[in-house]
Image 1 (cartoon, rainbow, N blue to C red):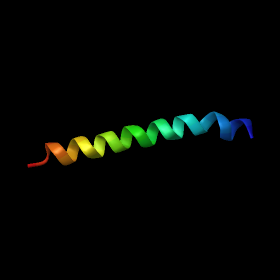
Image 2: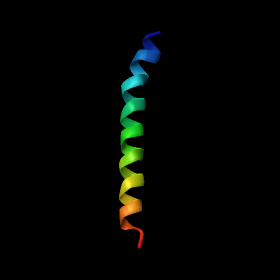
Image 3: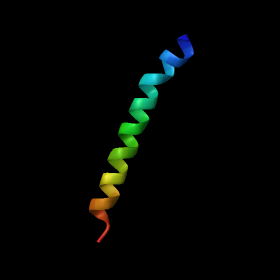
Length: 30
């Protein structure tokens, strides 16, 4: 259980970063 709770914030952070990168590439692409 503790492992799941420990990885949860990291998972959300990773998703946030991926979302930001996708948005950046979408805006950067001509």
